[in-house]
Structure formats: structure tokens, C-alpha cells
Amino acid sequence: GAPVIVVGREGWHPGVIGIVAGRLKERYGKPAIVIAINEGVGKGSGRSVNGVDLGTAIVAAREAGILVNGGGHAMAAGLTIEPGRIEALAAFLGEALGADCTASSEGKHLTFDGAVSPGGATADLCALIARCGPFGAGNPEPLFAIPAVKVNFAAIVGEQHVRCVLTSADGARLNAIAFRALQSELGPTLLNSKGRPLHIAASLKAEEWNGNLRVQAMIRDAAVA
Image (cartoon, rainbow, N blue to C red; front, side):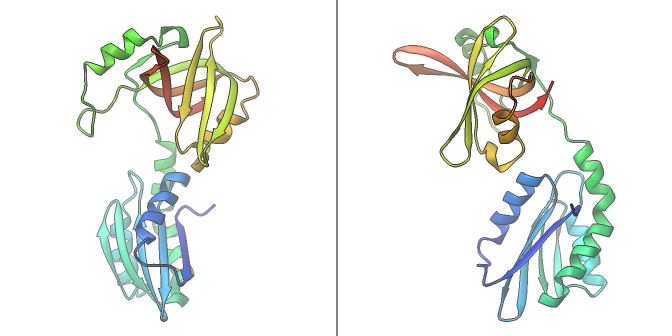
């Protein structure tokens, strides 16, 4: 597909295009621009990924005469465009940012704080992790690799989430959930693993359940082992 998503439609509300662009960027892992066309004028909002400077490309498109106006910074941009120029903008951005987008998608990686097996994911470990909190932007929650586990149960919860049970070779089991998994490749990977081992990236939480502490993995990503 194209390295940059550019979509525009008549009658979209300008107030939500930034949110939609952010969702598209998250789902597809590439920069996204959403344009609301009202009364013959397109107002667009863009969101980018790490390593792809969208603002500079939008300024270049403005200077090239493709946009009526536009600007921004590396991760976000805004623009005004004549509806007939949207395809030209998509082509321009594909040319300008294609190499950066390829490098960005190849460079996607997660940094782990440790590795844990389903049997080792205990309430005691969760208590130890909790003592390192509170967690936030400056102190992210520890992320664990859970290597070579099989998904022996997986089901869709709500509209976008996937709940599953991870099992290691020694038979130990770990309940897990992946929020908004159906917005990305993560959901299909978990639902269709069919007994193939997966490497899982997750944080761990202990929750009280019927008076007992139950550990749950909050899945961030998964890859075929």
C-alpha cells in the first residue's frame, strides 16, 4: 500500500479528523492525513509515526503549490487544500516520505525489561512490580517478553478486544487480554495462531477475583515464534 494514508470526504466533521488520523496511524503504523471537505474547501489533519517528519513535508507541499496552506511539526500537521488536489498531495507525500516510512516500519521494536514464563508470572512478581510505580510517561510500566507460548483459547470481548489463555510447554497457564487488538494485526495473530508458538510482549497485573489474586497479562504485541 501507499506509504502515507491520505483520505478525504465531503461532509466529514472537521472536529474529529485529528482523532481519526491518530486512529489510522495507530492501526496501520504509517502517517495518516484525514481531510474534511465542506463548501468546496478541504481542511486536513495529519498524524505521523516516529522517524517520519510530516510537518516538513506538508510545508514543502505548500511551497510546491499543492496546498492552499499548511504546516506543523514532526508528529502532527494541519492543512487547507482544494479537493481536486488531494490525489496530488498523496503522490507528493508518497514520494517525499516513502523512504522514511519504510525505515520507520522496519525499525519498529519494543524494549523489554525482562522475560517471564506463564508459571513465573505470579502475584508476588506483580507486587514487586507495583512497588516500582506509580507508572506514567516518565516511568513506563515494565514490559516482559513471554517467549514461545501457545494460545489454547482466544475470544473477542466487546467490539475490539481479545481475551486469551497462554500456555507454556510445561503446561502452566496465564490469562491474558489484548485491548483494541482488532484495530491492528495483533487480534488476528492471537485468534488464528492455531497452536503455533508465539512470542508475546505484555505487562502484568494482579487482580482480586473471588477473594484470590489472579495474574493477567496485558498483551501489547505478538509475533510467530
